[in-house]
Amino acid sequence: MNKRKILAAVGIISATLFAYSRWVEPSWIEVTRHQVLASIERPLKIIQLSDLHTYRFGVREKKVLEIIRQEEPDAILISGDTVANEGDWQSVGILLSRLRAPLGVFVVRGNWEHWRPNPDELKVYESSGVTFLNNDARPLLKKVWVVGLDDSLSGVPDQGKAFAKVPQGAFSIALFHSPAYFDSINSRVNLGLSGHTHGGQLRIPFLPPIWLPEGSGPYVEGWYTHGSKRMYVSRGVGNSILEMRFACRPEVAVFQLDPCTGACPE
Image 1 (cartoon, rainbow, N blue to C red):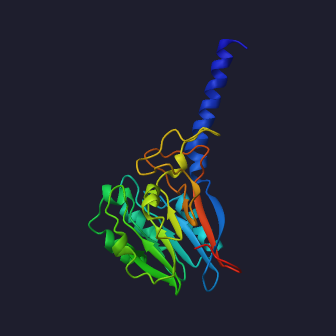
Image 2 (image 1 turned 60 degrees about the vertical axis):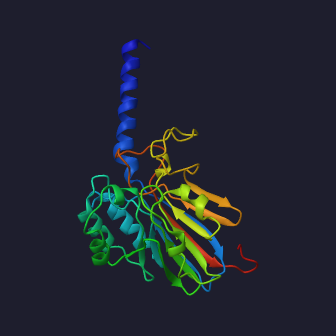
Image 3 (image 1 turned 135 degrees about the vertical axis):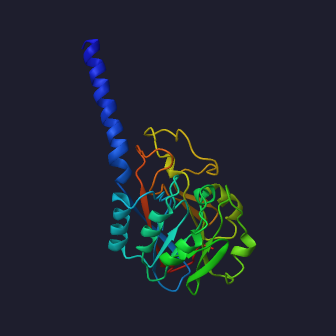
């Protein structure tokens, strides 16, 4: 093969990979499914959304709504960075207003809510019908509580304030953005849900991530444990800085919480 043909082949492959990572994978949302056994009174289905990075109400946002419609979750938990780098809060409000779940939709701040603040942020949440948890907690069921903490990278998380309402012995789901915070909170929660890393976003298959943002710690994606305490790090729905993904599909995580039939993890 002569040099011209080699260069042509390299050009075609490069163009194909670029087109795939720019226009295909960013909207190819994977639904991941996870079972969690807990000391709870009845089964509970929860969807975690993370890193929506909404800058317009487009194809990806419509796919998220379709997934939620099909899954019919009891509750939706959003682990921060709902707003995009550009700070389009109008589109955020449109998306949030269309999220529905019988036990509620709950959201915490990520780093971009702090870096691209909006004086009407609380009004956006209120008018959209979602519950904003900033170092606060709410019950999903009598013995299941969601605890929302401010982002540890760009905000001020306060565990004492956040857990003040949670009854002794309740199954607690901590919702926070940057996964490195798990090291500080794992002794207090049963299940942690975070995001922030985007799973690396642009990956070389079978190799560690090229880059992770500050606040990720040793966590990339998926499950991590500390004793009986567990954290799930979502790859997120949207993208940070570059509107591209490769070998790291966007994710909507579905958690099925089921009552234990025997001894439950503490």
